[in-house]
Length: 78
Image (cartoon, rainbow, N blue to C red; front, side, top):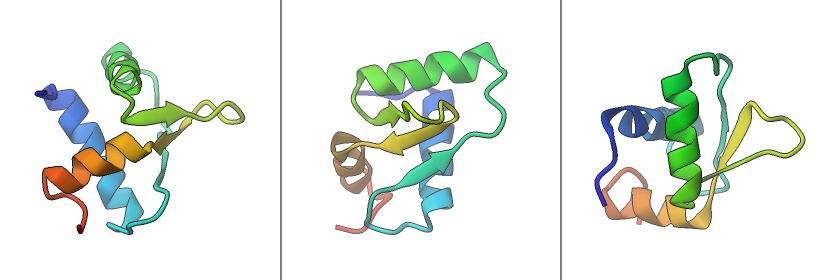
């Protein structure tokens, strides 16, 4: 399952923001103005990699599937 360049950048940013911690990862996207970013986030959501916060829409949580994927590709410790 290949990610687009934008999706990869978003996931890299998520890992950076998390400090690589192996806990529930919280990502805050301050500027969600670009259509491309919104579309990519929706794609990631469809793949169950992220879940949008219902309380604050600018916050996305990495799901268990997302964490497993990041571990598989070596972005998170095992």
